[in-house]
Length: 99
Image 1 (spheres, rainbow, N blue to C red):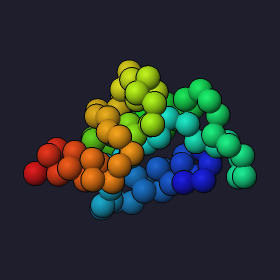
Image 2: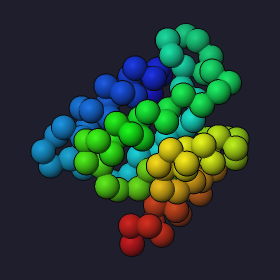
Image 3: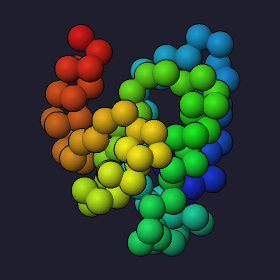
């Protein structure tokens, strides 16, 4: 999603659907605060993990930062797994979790 506010809005929208089909949340550590801006250098998405859990999200939350230290920050904030950003790695991880 393009901005942190978009991420907040989308997680609430997705999780407020009574029969949500969201089975995993992939979360980068740094999302731009405003359209057209670069992401911040410091992680800013830890609150998305809290928001998801507050809305009762119990499926995997996967940290997918390109920086391992940022993935560690998301894990400490409540993410359940971490992965590289490579699609094959993400697919393999989700398959191993859900199957």
